[in-house]
Image 1 (cartoon, one colour):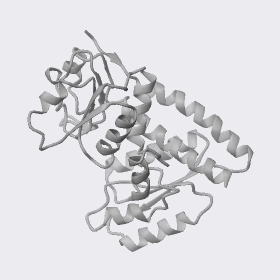
Image 2: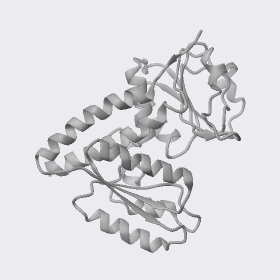
Image 3: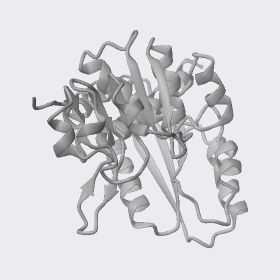
Length: 284
């Protein structure tokens, strides 16, 4: 068996075309969706992520504002900027690139973003709405994964879904979304005993733990759908996921690659959330 590839690049391109059409409708009404991205420090990976987000905005016809600070900036200065952006009607989405330097209270910073502009979906109000099944914004990576499953025709109702990783950014919201779609969900983590016991039961396996090639082919149920959220860099500088792609591809029914899988979908869903925020602003 050779698994079918779930091509995130191709799906993202298709979705971005549809988003661009909606952007043009708003622009004809005199409103251009705007995203502000705050980057603190000079972490190379964060700088790449921010650059990609800004570029994607501009290609979709949105306007973006990149705000950069040195790593030793006072937290109060960043909070003041967030307050300014909250009150700026030309900005519909605000995100702060994580991780922040150690002297920051990340939770406090994220809570300072207006829930109506929290396009990452991290504000407690938006997390609660997701938990209740009435999300305002769905966190971008889980949102992208759900679109990938949907586009691939994966049957979620009644399926056994296993998520490896319990972060607030991916694992927990992913579990909420899969449960809402009718899947039976198991969330595994660093304290899980016999991880392979759980992963081998999964019809749908989502790996989001941040450990290179942790999930191997012998841990996967034959024919399973495997979504690899991990982005890791090996000693030779190459990117790889949390799944050992070669061994997994020989067992799985469908698999997302790294790179070219979840990554482009995450940015696409950020654009979707920003556009939705702008559309709500236009209605108001």
